[in-house]
Image (cartoon, rainbow, N blue to C red; front, side):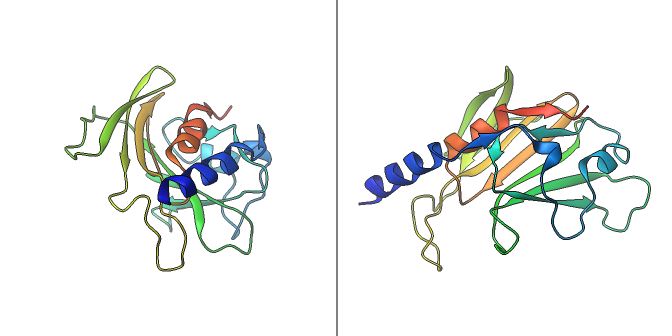
Length: 172
């Protein structure tokens, strides 16, 4: 039964329309905008060009009270303004060291735009959470243009995470 449900969900996600308007996205919770963010970090800001067009974006900056410089930030994508559960989060920070493959049995090496990355599925992937939602996805890590990226989701499948990751482009 789990296999059939996963196939149905994967097929559904493949049919979601994707667009290339990351910088024209609706922002939530009065977060900073991408152009404002670019001026306050010392690393490349990458954003996905392909996300479903009904997703909204919230940007979380760290440290939260910084006025001039952020050490890192997270892009949180929600399905809409009323949904408190995010679909995907993408953390970006300055890349200073090479990272090694995590030592877990469910981590695999992935190619993301000719860059070495690692995908680690959740240990309970394929099970249902306490709200009855199927747990899918995991954590995807890679470095690009001097930026370390870490994407996580328990609501979209690995294939969709990879499609979003491969659409990441430097914000001009």
